[in-house]
Image 1: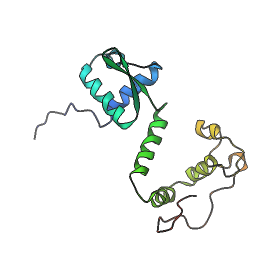
Image 2: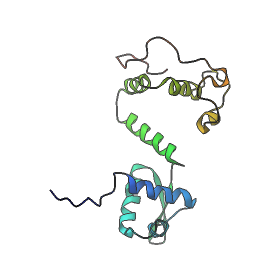
Image 3: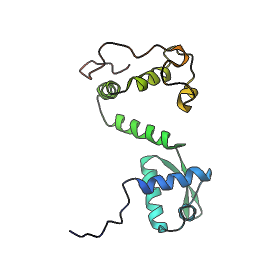
Image 4: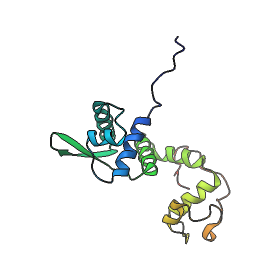
Length: 162
């Protein structure tokens, strides 16, 4: 084994950098545009490969721009990217209710309260305020606290909803 440190980047780092360039551009970009935006340290073919992989994942869409493609993100930010990943994982399982039940059972009280507000349990705090973080985490808008009692276990027939 060598003592020379690896030059490999952490998994997903290049994809994140490419997406950041696309988000900041606010217009479709070719691989060459992305390469320029990232400082030109990466080969255009590397950028093209990353963009093709992001396209395969549905994270970007592409249109013809001469002989190349121009890419546009299908998610607006890192939160949208995380949500897309969560949807992808949920879609991989046949028993969605169990997956959701297990996910919900591990939420903190604050996250449970936020989820309830986002699902529209009668709260007077809008989704935008919750997503932007402008509403307080606990007791905002007069919402009741987390429901006491057993949480879903993900067993057969579990609804999985809070």
